[in-house]
Amino acid sequence: MVLVTDSEFVAGIRNSDEAAFENVFRSYYERLCNYANTMLYDVDEAEEVVQNMFLALWEQRDSIEIHTSVKSYLYRAVHNSCLNRIKHNKVKQMHGEHVRYNTESSIEGTSQMVIGKELEQQINAAIESMPQQCRTVFVLSRFENLTYAEIAEQLEISIKTVDKHMVKALKILRERLKEYLPLLLWLLINKN
Image (tube, rainbow, N blue to C red; front, side, top):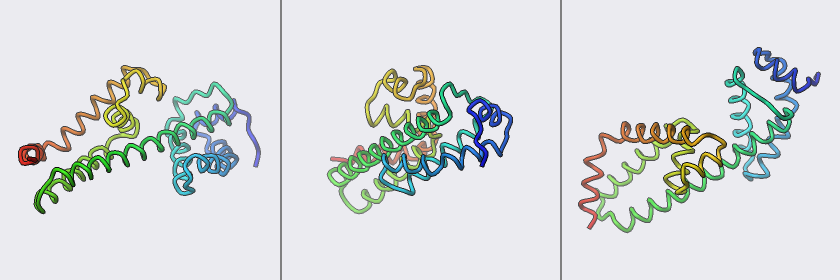
């Protein structure tokens, strides 16, 4: 395996040089998986994070800008992906507990329980259908109550980009849940 310099890698990947990309992939994949596993404590999830990072790197090769070493760039990308995964898992867990608590304490009867679970599944499916960055912004805003400025700082994007992601997320939710609006209103009316 021939190691390439950082500038050769960046130039190679921009020119869709699969050999340069594969060389870097093979050089760093195992180490990055081990690093991700130290954060996630799950080998499969760590491998998925690293694979997704390399996939995104390849898909965005035309616009890639690496201002540090390739090694630093890859480790930072995996680190950020792991943090996002941890936060996403935490939010999903908190959301699940919140929904379970509200479902158990407020929905009476078998038919209402079934309707509540169906609605919960539809909401979760709508959230999961969002593009990753859009979903991350939505979750940080709605479930972690971060301001747009805090989200922008944490994700290293502009506030305007955060706003665009939120508009897109809310549009997706409205579109995916429009058939369930009467059901949601019925559940709210019959809550007490």
